[in-house]
Amino acid sequence: MTDPDVHTLTGPYALDALPEDERIRFEEHLTVCTFCSTEVDELREAAVKLATQVATPPPPRLKADVMAAISDVRQGRSPVTERPGRQFSRRSMLALAAASLAAVTAGGVAIDQYRDKTDAIQANDRVAAVLAQPDARTVRSQVTGGGDATVVASNRGDAAVVVLHNLRKLPSNKTWQLWLIDTNQTPHSIGVAAGDLTKIVNGGITGKVAFGLTVEPEGGSARPTFPAAALISMT
Image (cartoon, rainbow, N blue to C red):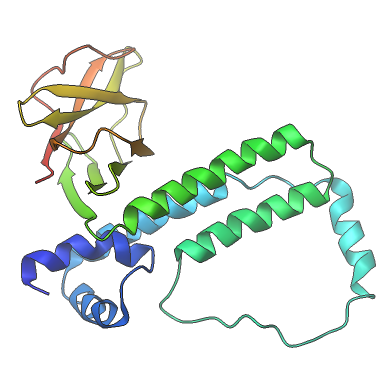
């Protein structure tokens, strides 16, 4: 693992997707690299936020039903053991989402609500798929005026995850707009944002060489307004 390569492993590490030898070497690197340590924390935070989208307050009778059933449950050894240093793995993230679904469906939540929660779980799965790609590359930049933008992109998976963090609040008639820029320097809009967000971009990543963030009029623009608040090379 060369020095330039090690900085590209924040995404796979955040999702517990590194082989054991690379994980050990990367954790040694984290002790001396504040940049990578901060990036891992932000990616884990983004993954957890997506997972908690499926959480729903339990119905009033759920606690009473659980307490009533406790006397019928035989104690036994749990087959699950915790492993230190393996937090927020793809498996645990999806398990959290599944547990939330189990709770709400046990309380009799309607099938259409169940489908809404399934959409959130599928979003979690797409994030995990991008971060775990062997060619996933993580790039990060400060945003003019405050905050930062992180992009994890995979040409192989033709997908990316964009994380905007601590952005300044814009006037009500302005919005943040996200762009992907191709080899001909042509910008392609991938949406607008009111502030911080975690966005999954499915498709259109191959052939793009940069990510841009601009301030635009409310509703967005057909072309970016320069200077950009952030412009990040993805090559």
